[in-house]
Length: 108
Image (tube, rainbow, N blue to C red; front, side):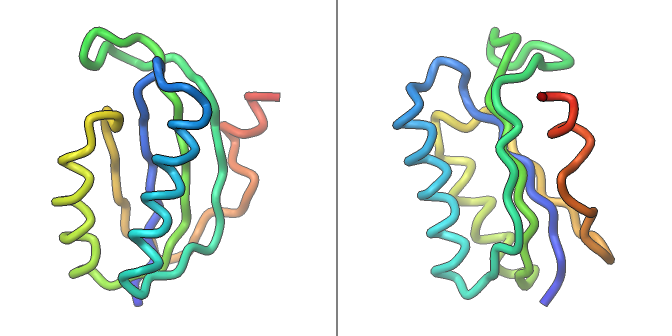
């Protein structure tokens, strides 16, 4: 199993319940493919560095997972079909970053 850090960037116009259901849907997809979610952080509504689809803000969610590379390919296909997800990024790491992250400290 490889270690990955995942950042999901969601549409800022989503209602809280819709946002939570999107996140839970993503987490259930991961666990159904025999991957393990180690940690999760909700970074909340943050400014974007540049506009994405005319949005200047977005909801960020960060996860640390362990999965095989084949699962990531399958997840990419599924995530590309989500209308509420503006961007996502999977980064393969040797060791996971210690939580809470710096971005989580800035939010407080």
